[in-house]
Length: 454
Image 1 (tube, helix red, strand yellow):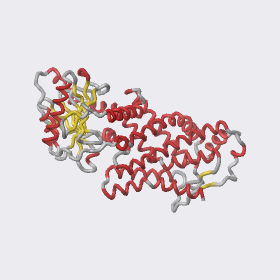
Image 2: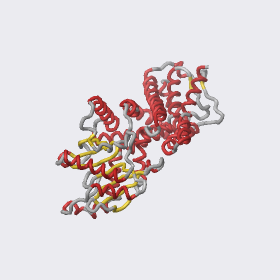
Image 3: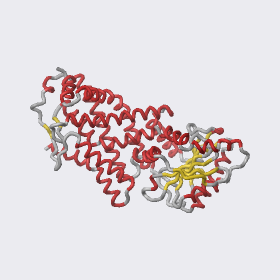
Image 4: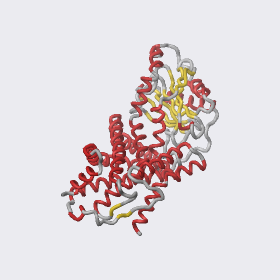
């Protein structure tokens, strides 16, 4: 009897629904090969992107414009400069940089193009109101191009919008792998103590695959789901524009043919900033563009406290009159899209959270590698001694609570979820406590390795 036949018989014996569990087990194994190859690319590129700021040595300006009048003037000056420099192009969007609120990025459609793909990329400094990309240092320019290349690989595998959808499908497969692994782990651990790892050979690899996978289960689920939302963000935004905002598009379809001049952009921005007391602009979509609607500017604005800065409101401003048309509450799926970027990249809690994120990434990469190696070893090795497990020694961790079956992944998943969400919204001591909670799975991993070496 081969190792593969032994594993299949074990799976059948441990499941109350034999045929269903066997199908789930085999799908987990073979789909895992497909996911593991892709995950290696995503994990390695994601690690580099995670420390982009540190590798580039970027620093934030000490002075940030706070007066609403100054902000509106700065945005208006930027638009004038773009229109002067590129008179035949169309401005599609303006938005502050993620790492420096004083740097405003612009996307400009070449020769009047309305789509973001292929648009001209410009950057401006609010404090200087001059283009930050006119005379970029060659070293910084090369560095930025490298990270743009790396992001394109991570986000779409160089396949454009089709690649983003493909990556989203891979992300769904990854989430399925986590959920199916959760059920497989629970079935295989019935009657066993938490942290049991058989010593030697393939059995040690498969047990480590299950154990490390269980410790990183909660983190992987959050990163996987947030990655899926980011991959499908374009489709979800269009669903919102052509669904929830369809009445505005229909109402103002005829604005394209009107001869009435647009209101000054200074008044448009001022109108949006006055709509909410603590409004901070996070994105401006211009009228009649890929992610815009006829006759209106769309402003995504955030608050200034720890909670409201993560959640956006949508302001609709009439392009002809500069009057605020309405404030739209974003649907849940778009709120999840906005929250997905920090949750996916883990860049919202400083260098300590980035280090924790990197360790989780390496653990998940190890899970994929262990799964691949154990699969191919099982196919090649048929040693009879490795099929006898009754005399093998076990390494196990004694915890003050019992975590049989599904208890362990649920327990550590709750810790990971609490730590990640807590670090996203909490401040001060609570934020530090959230980072401490995220360390719990690594402490357990360290303890079991220490016990195994005694």
